[in-house]
Image (cartoon, rainbow over all chains, first blue to last red):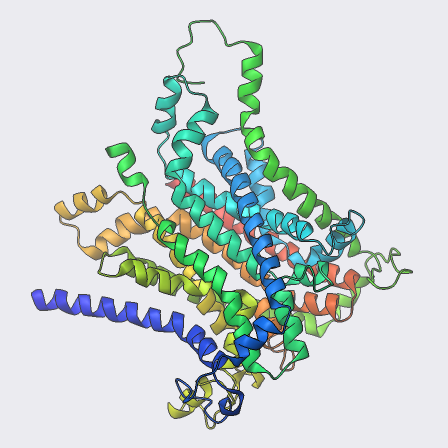
Length: 277
Length: 307
């Protein structure tokens, strides 16, 4: 019996290890190539680590290219989108979770539909709508578009977190005389912090990765986000893998940092003790 | 409000209106944004499907009726893209979900270093999708990547070559990248649902003599079912529309063998700048996805009514 549970534990750890290796290997390879000197790139193609390391690719990307600007633009766009979406989705997710009202079915249907249609379809109409408003080639335009795209899923996400919190909590507060909005803000929202963190993380990474609309709506270098910049870079210096991957590693940094910061809140079961205790 | 003691016959008129409008106030900002930036352009885009719209041609814009759809009916590349979409979506969702569920179950057990492991295995999700595409395209490249050489060493290949240029295997490239990228999504969502299951239930079931397999089937799975239904529904639709990886890795090739409908729309729109035809294809895809989602919603409703 004891050896069987030991075997199970071993299998569990082994499976975990396999997942970790699978998740990290491509990123490790990205890093490896970004520090490989050009003359060793092909001759040591399948070595796990180059015999000589260099930071010349990073140096070039940071000092002699427009990537710092792209980086800043992406940071602004993703951060603003994440905040806007999380505020809107908390409100609408709460409405869907706690109220039964006539239009609820239609709101859910509308949000599901927005999850379904190919966004490519919107490229031309959105371009034509934003153009006269002066919102093309502008970071604000991107924030508006990305916020709209991310609100429906974020709403469902927040709703599921609200659903996990017992109604007794705000009902108790309302019996004590609080309005529903105060109960929502002071009791339910703090309990949903893991959900809020998850939503922020999801939306930030989604906005950071978006390529299609950024390509369409942004034409100059000044307002280009990182994906647009990297793609331009790829087409311009198509074989310079070292520099490309160095830029890629830089693009990873904020997304990964943000993700590492919030990931422990992602799946924290805060509600477990709230009603019991 | 329901639980407030009501001494009066009925609450004042203003209060009833305020109460009735409350959910609308909560959802209004999100709804306004969605309608303005998605619904209105969607309707405009649908109208493009019946018009001759070429972005750079100021003289286009005329009404062409069903011409685009007639052309589409004859378009062999479109039928190929339809088949590829099924294969791409089915394989990606199945593998992402299966490995995501296993990962969630593995992480649900407490062990030393779980926080760190969780951070590491969720990391691929933070990788921008086009970068994931580039990264994997590169791993499959025999000049710089290790994978072909490993496949060769394992005897899976006669010589180290790039599967992305092999018509029969090319689709596995984007699918591999997609699975790598998408496992964390399912794992996070399922793990959150797993941890919301009251632990007392497991304790009670244990006391009543239920084994681990029985507990999984009679507690874990029923609790996860709604989460599974909604994530699989959303993810299936999402992935079938998800062209980034394919565009970055193979651009639909070789010989259109990795061209899915979404990347075909992209090609029509951005290479040929033919937004009318692209919108017509998108409309067909939209109809198919709508049918699919209706089926899922009906299924879920039936299941909920039974339960």
